[in-house]
Each structure stands twice: as structure tokens, then as C-alpha cells.
Image 1 (tube, protein in one colour):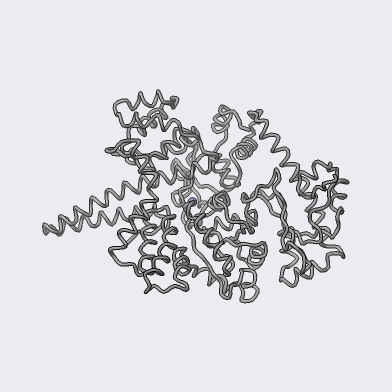
Image 2 (spheres, protein in one colour):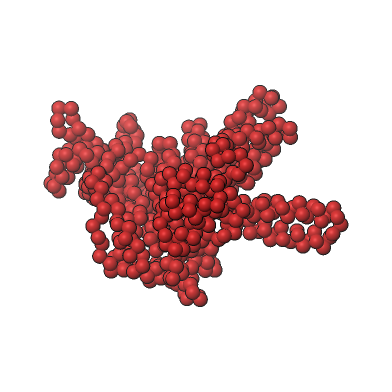
Length: 600
Ligand SMILES: [Zn+2]
């Protein structure tokens, strides 16, 4: 289901980006731009600006930027097609018919139907929670310290202990048997017909990021009841591992605070929320999936994992760490004393104590090391080897090169690994991570080696017009000068300026005087556009950062040898001037580091 590209282009021209951004942020005119304090990160001075003639926005603080559509996607947390609808409505432009995709349409229809039944069921369950039959549930909530207000916020409900009360209600509302079965709210009987899935349970609805109920969890109130938690099956509206509990309520706070606290269960989220800790999401039982991490990553690039402190919780936390690191998000780990979960801990010790512990959460590597040395004797070479083996995957999984080295050094120091062994181990840690790079280098040839960042960025640029429109204006010639693929970047920029078509022919013509570039082109043109525009834009931005970082690294390295030279030659003034310059570059460099700090 897509809008025709011509409509999107027209709409972008007709919709005044300043007027649309104004609906969300108060802008002030400053030269050619309009500026404001950024809605996407916390700041005191305005570094968010909108350029109406270029039809873009950009934040110099958090580097978010893009078209009016990107802005609406970010601020409303919606998909690209939904952003188009919103912009069209605000601009008073009528929508054209969507480019049809019948399978998508059918699935969407099914999904909408499931959501509608879920909404009916939820409203009814919420009513039931007020009735006489729900006294025990209300007592349970009271005993867990959950207020009426919190219960309303999370739309908790009660499914009475009946085989058909809900089905009867839904049929009265007009649901057919087929719809009931597709919704997962009932269980099909072998002999035909069905019965209510949730009976005698406290109901926790799970919402998608837009606040639609997509699934339910039901907790039994019978101490003997099995299972303790019963969950919705997968439906057209719900795929396991795609949603995070609570995100619909906590996403703004997560964005404001710049990090998310990841917990396991419903109450681990609800109780902290009630006490004012509102940047929390819950992964709900199953192992954390890459999709869930990507979802968090849209709101913050740091996660504090706060799982149970028991053995199962620690194992789950370690798996979560690997999944999070793979998405290039920074992880810390909070383990509460006495194996407490966040719910218990806050009710027992208060929220201030919880926040203090959270502030002192360990970097993931420290947590992993602690686990690895537990019950082991580092004086025994065999034990030490096992501890190292257990720790290194968590160093290897770190994608940022500088951080990786930092964590490696911490691990080696903590595990008392000797200097000579370190070099070998570092080689291994790097070797595995760069295996793909080696393959790339073989294809391209030995002398000239485009980096992963170059190749990826170019791949993204050639595969998406929309992305090119955003990234090309930000690309400076200095970003690619001296790179083996510089010709292709230059060609893209030139073709973009003339609004000419991007194709293998037009690009290779423009880059004809460079053979490496041409060799490289065909493969680039094979790049498939990624599923999500959001993701591609984030990828492109981090590639661009990587290019700038590499360039600064080359300059700094160059300066270092110049300084050493000047020093040896006794040219003190020259040396100090170079050192100042290096300091300047190191500062610039820190902008591109996730911590916002430079090494040394
Ligand atoms: Zn910002």
C-alpha cells in the first residue's frame, strides 16, 4: 500500500514545513532558518532548525533531521504512509487512491477487525473489574499497592470465571463466529464452537505504539491456577516479539530522558510508573527480539536492563545484552539486592532508593565480568580461560570501535590477562567482527578498499530517492574526498543537483574516469531498499558519522606523527601549535562518539 511518488513530491512542495512544525514546536525566525529547542532531545539552547527553502529540518544537537514527513513520523511515532496522511490533512491536500496491494489490504482489514473486537472486550472487562464478582481482584491490586488511577491508566480489567460471558457479549455487539476465532479471544473446540480463552483472570492489555489494544495477558488469581500468566495467541494484529509492554505510555519520557529501563513483567513496569519512573518498557517473558530493540532504539540509544536477580533472570539479561549490542545501543545492567524485581524493590525501599541504584547501574561489560568470575579462581589458568571465553563475546558484539577497545581493556584488566596474551585476544575480537569486511575487500580488489560505511551509505543512497533527498544536502565534499568511492559520491551529488535520474548508466557515465568506482557500481545498484525508511535514515546517518569520524581519525593520526617530529626537532612553538590543532580535532571528534566524550 503506497502513495504514488508524484503525489508525495507535490505534497512536500505544497505543505509548508514551517507551518506544520509550528503545530508541535514554537519556532523563531533566525536568518534563512527557523529555530527552536529540539523536541527530540533535552536542551537549553535551540539547536533545532527548519529551512523552508530546502524543505528540511535538522537538529545540531541530536542530529535528527529530514523532510516534513520525517518530522511527522518522528514526533507522532507513525509510519511513512501515516505521516503522509497527516501532512496532507494539515495542508488541506486531498489524498489520492493508494497504490493497491491486495494482500496487505486483506491483512490490514483482518488486523483492524481483531483490534475492534479487542476494544470491545477490553471495555467490557474494565466494566467487570468494577462489579461484585471482581472483589478479590480489586483486593489483590490493593495489596500490590496499585491505585485506582493506575488501574485506569493501564486499562486493567477482569475476565469473569465463565466459559462464554465474553463471547455472548461480543456476539451481541455484532461479532461473527469467524471473527471471534480470528481474534484469539476464544479457543476453538474440536467438535465445533468455542469458549472464552480468559476466565477468572486479571487482564493486562498490551497496546501497540499508537495505543491500540493488540493482545492481552491474563493473570490467574487462583494460587493453584495454571498457567500463572496466560497470553493472547498470535493474530493478524499481534506478532510475538514485535511489541513492548507500556511503550505507548512511556515513549515520550524515554525520549526525554535519553534512555529506557527494560524490565520483564507487567507489574515491574506498572509499579515504577505509578511511583513516577516513567521511562520503562517491559519485554514480557519471551526473549528480547531484535525487533523490540529496534523499537526502543527509535526513542533512545541507551538501555538499562533491570531483570530479576535470580539465575534465570541473569541468563535472560545476558541474552538481552547481546541483542541490544547488536543494534548498536549502549547497555547498562541494574541488579537489585536479594534478587528483588523492580516491583518488590520499589514497594519495599521506595522510589528514591531505586533511582539511586539505577544511577549506579553497571556498564554491561562489568556485569558480564562479574558473572564470569563468580565461583571461579582467576589464579587457575583453566578457570581464567573460561572466564575470558565467557566475556569476549560481549566485547565482540560492541559495534563502536572505540568503545569496543575500551571494554576490551576493562575486561583484560579485570580478568588479569597478561600483555602478550592481550594482543592475540584483541586480534581475535576484531577478527571476527571484521570477517565481512575481508570478504568485501576480496571482491573489490586489494589496493583500494572502500570501507563498510562508504559502501553501506552509497547502497542506501542509490536505493531510495527519499533518503537521497535528505542525505545529499547534508553531504559535504570533504566527507568523501580522498575515499576510493569519491567519484560516485560526486556523481550522485551532481546528478541530484540537476534532478537527473539515478541509474547505473547515468552514474557510471558521470564516474567514468575512475575504474574502481565503476567496478563497484554494479553491485551497489543491486542494493534493495530497506523495509523501514526510519531505519535506513538512521543507518545513513550513522554511516555519515562514521565517514566523518574516520576522516578526523586520519587527520589526528597525521597530526600525532607531525607533533612527534616537531618534538624531536626541538620546534616547541610548532609542536604546541600542532597540539592545539589536535586538541581541536579531538573535540570535534567527540561529537560523533555515543558517549559524547573523547578518549584520553
Ligand atoms: Zn535534537
